[in-house]
Length: 561
Image (cartoon, rainbow, N blue to C red; front, side):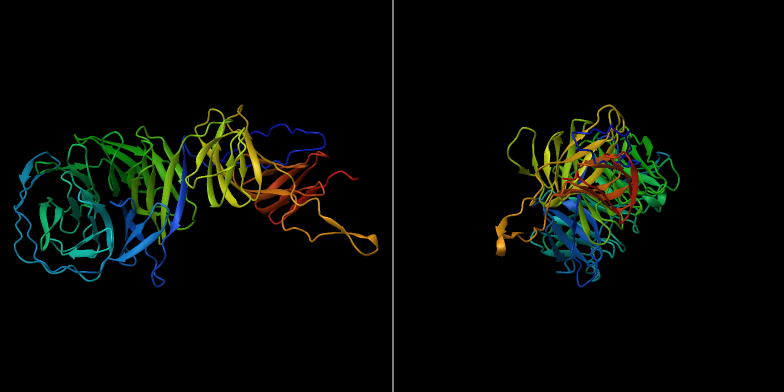
């Protein structure tokens, strides 16, 4: 959404351009993405509050519904099923093996961790449950942690078992470990724990941490080590395959680390909410921090995308976006379709898309798309209804896939029965993109290639509908027209910021973040309507400019007959 120089007005016979040109860009670096969100229904009026999310063994997304004590399953088409997380509380005896761990403190001195053996039968998991994070082990079992304590397991058909944790307090982050088992953290107990289901219960292997470290999110590295965040110690921990534990201090004080992931470069990456950074830590503990632009940014959960970049949730509601950062530090942000609360601490890759949890009641999908090229191509994404596209030279329209796709200039878009988002390069040589939405018409598009803020023109095409009424002879030879049709003429509505033009027949309008429409009537007039913002309309017959504000309209009439 960016500015562009106004292009020369062309008069074709008595036809003129209806142009709507915005000022100001929403910066998004090279690349584009399709963003869709799916509602998760409340339970008895209570918001579900989706939290952690993972890719399940059945090809669906599974998430922890913290607000309603449930585990949710969402298909890739957005259909959601909710299962109670309170069922089948286990009182079975636990039988964890004896475990010895070794801890390395920041000064690189080592001290052996205490040997822990659990033989007493633990109490059942607490009845209240607040599912928090979820992960799939190598056997296809889904395990979830619980902010109220305990650990749970759910099968693909919704059967739940819950087990008391090996210590009191919440269970937090969880991941599939290098051995295929589930590993989780306990912040209050300062533990990293391995769990597996055994006959009659669950077996735990515990690794105590030295000091008050409060471990939270956890991930497996390419070296077979487990890496975890330690917010209370402002550090990142590493549990090596041989049981050696190392703690690495985060250079920025008070970083408040929130998300951790294995990066596309094979290194571990994590977010720093309070200091507004995304950081890389190598296997040797070398930390490189990359600052994020903007004072309101609060990076949360983190995942590697199918495009070779890292994607993060924005915890700041004001951002209302998903962030993307390359290993070189180039940052993009993509606006979310629903206003309100920002994403939660949950994001995961499944196939060619990333899925995230959001606020009270939504699951979102981000699909990276090819980068649009100024003057040559744009990304089109259907937002509602049915949108059809016909390629240049083709005779048949095809339905636009719901994840969107890249299309060449000159493609014809039929948005009479839907709404489409068009994302284009800001202009020649610019790494930014801009976006607008269109509906209620058929149009083609083109873009200037000579400027860094190139104008995108959406030209209405197709005949004016229902402009030749069927006539019949009435009494005394009087000719009557049939009842007026609902749609007459042709029209196109747009909504967005940036330099976009709708080409009508007799006017041109300049906008600033406007929701506007253009109609070519059966009488030959061009009508500009403004629902939000303001436009400067140029009457290309007289050359005069007129400002039309919210709720207003301006008519440029056709020639008298």
